[in-house]
Image 1 (tube, rainbow, N blue to C red):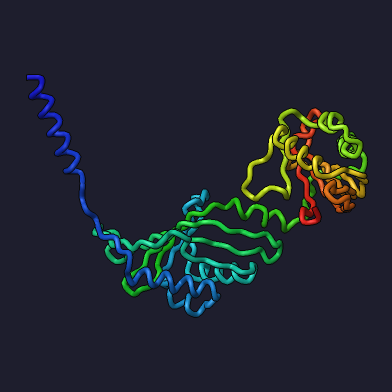
Image 2 (cartoon, rainbow, N blue to C red; image 1 turned 120 degrees about the horizontal axis):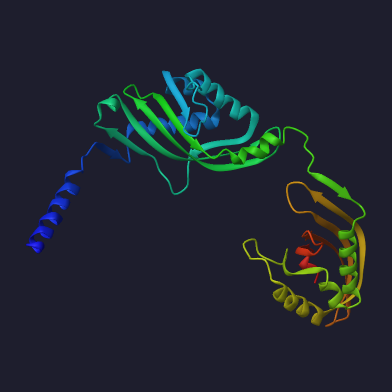
Length: 310
């Protein structure tokens, strides 16, 4: 009896699952409504306001999906077109287009509420450079457009991460980000460590670093992970096997105590080395950034020099 009951329950649950399926429209990969959106992209990117005026319906309503102000009214046709004009005139290289590896879907719903429009769901890429600030922005945006029976855009709802614009907004004002020191204990630490290289005292060099310090520089590819101390020691040993350090002379050094991130000492050096294979003397400029923890230990070293000189 128990087995029969379980079988009936399974059958009943399967029927319920299938009974819940109901088709409510059709999805198109090609559709005249998609052509309208592509025409809009072309008009936006060329700032052709006359074409935009013909593509946008007079009763257009535009909203932001991430809008937190419940009292904000939808954008009108005029506001939408003025906004496009503003984006183009206040930015350089402004572009709005379908994102890579993405394409729009046109959906015609059976629902009575959408009988007069075709919804076009777009995964977009928006990019440009702030005309006032020079700050570059490049990000994805999702927009739902409604195209009416007259092939005009009557509605849009966009979702976009606003954070990439924060730096541009902030850069319109003069904001301080800390202090610059010409003398500081962290500067003293860097000077002692760098001069230790000239005298071949690696113990004095590494005493400046936290045991978990990381190392990076122009010797690494863009996506490489930072080197650990042991990895850097190995790289440094290889260098010293082939070159002798003659002198390390400081040409400039400052400590930047930032409010937005951990402070760093940036220093410039005249490095003179001798290549052991042919006794050639090589002189080159070296720039080094050292970041410090609260205990005054170096936690990150970044170095920049021209490897082609070697």
